[in-house]
Structures are given as C-alpha cells and as structure tokens.
Length: 85
Image 1 (spheres, rainbow, N blue to C red):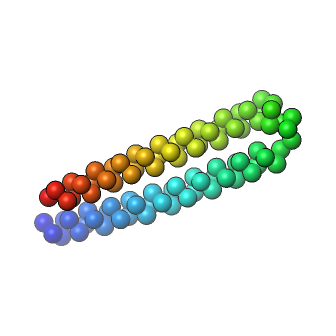
Image 2: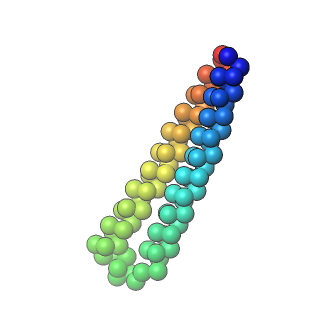
C-alpha cells in the first residue's frame, strides 16, 4: 500500500510540474500575442484582423484560466483522497 501511495504522490508531483510548464508556455504565448497586437497600427487594431486577433488571444487566455482551475481542482481532489486513505 505504501509503495502505491508513493507512486501516486510522484504522479501528483509530475502533474504539478507539467501544469506549471504548460501555464508558463500559455502565458508566454499570450504575452507575445499582446506585444504583436500593440506593435500594429491603430487602424489594424481597430479593423477586422485586429478584432479577430484579439478574439483569439482572449480565447487563449480563457483556456489558460480554465486549464489552471481544472488542473488545480483535480490535484487538490487527488491530494485529499490520498490523505483520507
């Protein structure tokens, strides 16, 4: 039983590490897109392409938020289950 718990705890650690890597990469993508948007002309920003670009950036931000919330929740649930064993 202890060996199985150790395996699960290692998997949780790996999940947390991967979550951080993915969160950092998503944040980097968002920052790059924000910089790219800001570098464009005001006309482009206010036009259809600018709108679509910003809409896609917003989708990425929403995905990043949902990803972090869902993964954090899953990790917390697993940690609670381990503690209750």
